[in-house]
Image (cartoon, rainbow, N blue to C red):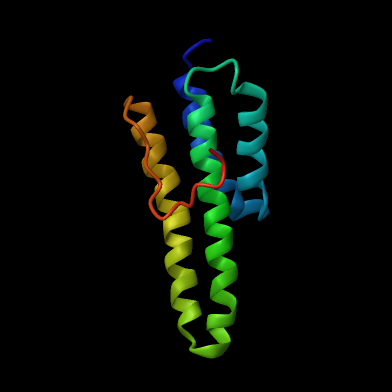
Length: 112
């Protein structure tokens, strides 16, 4: 296994493709993780964190849809989710580039 912090940083930042393509923020990290998890040191753990975060963000967004119609609070929650989905990949990419362990809050562990 080789160490490749640049690829780990790129994997975290690739989540931001959701802003451009809508689904690329899930597909690109998934492909990178599946192809590199046995070749790059730490990719398996980082890939699982990223995918768990992306799945959690998707579920939280789906939950907000009925809240829009019921209480109107869903819009505020969707804005909060959007901010979290933009800020934490950037913060964690910076952490990875500095050799620190990333952390995604409110992430449900689907992939162990």
